[in-house]
Length: 382
Image 1: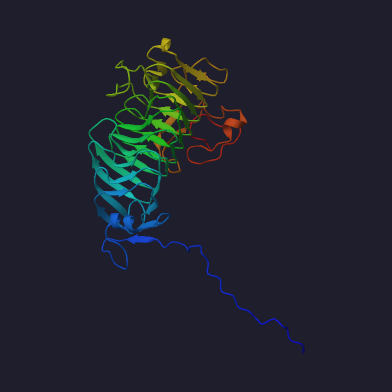
Image 2: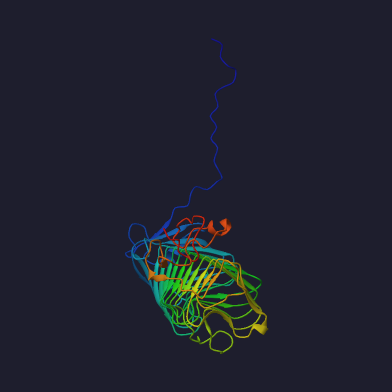
């Protein structure tokens, strides 16, 4: 047999690419190679890592500093509990990216948010968490300046969530706070609230301070708040679609533009340069459902149809709107999904009201697919 003139060569190549980063862990005893303190784990973790926090109660505040990229992941919001005085978690810029997942965060807030992103640009995502806090100052929130909030319960604070431009809140519950959600605009930013329950506050469900903000509220229930469901101060373009605003009152909150007492429990415009568009939405509240303190201040409502308004109108009426009728809503209750809704009783004028395919293509608050024709409001009847 003829042999090759070339010898067999075995070449070893050392890769310059790093392997996957191992997660840093925390448990109450600091055993099995884990840290006992969350802050020590944060300080030791490389960027891009996940800090795994075992079940238990951890007392004290933590800081994720500038330039970091980390995830804090608990064993579940009822199992991994962080307690203390505000702030319990502070995410500091610049160029910081943080995700909080599966944590229960409980504390007392005095003049600072319980959990907050500080200094732009900061990206803070909050997922599958429970935040419970108390506050004594207007605007002090359980959750301040998040980028994204998903599947999270926020309760018991002076303000539930303060959110600015680019913020997204979805599939969440904001219940039993003073103000539910406070939207603070600036630099033509946009905010989206989707498939969320905002209920039982001692002030307004949503309050919007302008600064050229564009806000969208869709497939959501704003219910049983003492002040208007949506209280708009100034310089805002707001769209409310496929949502239910019911049982909200006309009490004057201790903030928010002109001290004039609201006359609308649904959507109240306090000051100037506000445009509100309402479509496929149910409004059944104290006083009028839509009103402005002084229409001469460049404040206007616009209906694009398929609304059911108990005491209206909300802009020039469309032929597909129903005015002056009881929408026949069941009490706020667990009707499936992650948050409570008002079911539609038999004979409700909201049933099968929407005949436009583009409006019916989004699921309802519970994630139920809508069929054409679909129902006005946040609840799609079976």
